[in-house]
Amino acid sequence: MTKVDLVDLIYERTGSSKKEAAEVFEAILAIIRESLCRGEKVKISGFGTFAVNRKRARRGRNPQTGDPIIIDDRRVLSFKPSQVLKEMVASGDKTRS
Image 1 (tube, rainbow, N blue to C red):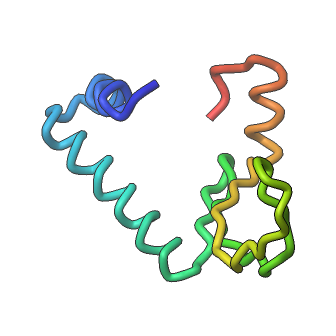
Image 2 (cartoon, rainbow, N blue to C red):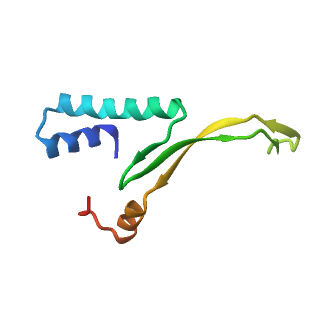
């Protein structure tokens, strides 16, 4: 499913114009993106939680040469689905909301 598909579904389900649906969708994504860039968690009830975690620097190996290297510390994005979403996916139930 692509962004265009999601906008089309919002348009169909809400009865708004495609332009309005696209603007709302973009605004939601922008809010989530900005919050994550600030290091905040984004929790969507019944869906899941997006969070930014910090990974410490560590030793690793270059897989081509076998030489030891240092992998720098970094921020990584993680998503943890809610129990409701896990159950819906496991059961194939599309009707719960």
